[in-house]
Image 1: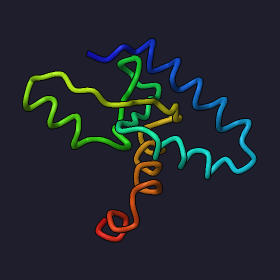
Image 2: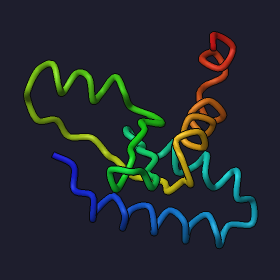
Image 3: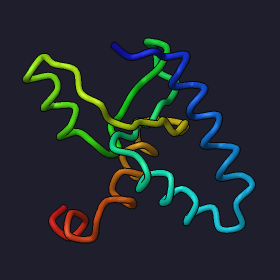
Image 4: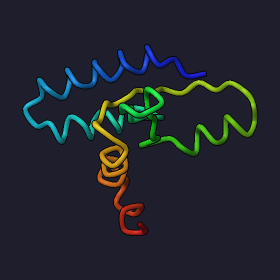
Length: 100
C-alpha cells in the first residue's frame, strides 16, 4: 500500500537534490536511473495524483503475483499529469522513445 506522506518526503528530497545540482536535467536523469520504481506525484481533485515514470512492469508483476517484492522507489513532484507524462517520455531509454 502506498504511503502518501512518504512519497511527499521522497519528492522533497529529490527536489533538494535537483535544486543544488549544477546540471538539473542530468541530476533528474540520475535520480530516475538510480531507482527501480519512480512515481510522479501531483495535485489532483482527489488530493494526490500518481503516474508511474519508471517501473510499471515491476508493479504489474507484484500486483499479479500478490506477493511482496523488494525494490527501490522514489517520487518526483510535478505540477500536473501532463508534466508527469512528458517526464516519462523524456527519460525513457532511447529505444522506447523511438517506439513511441
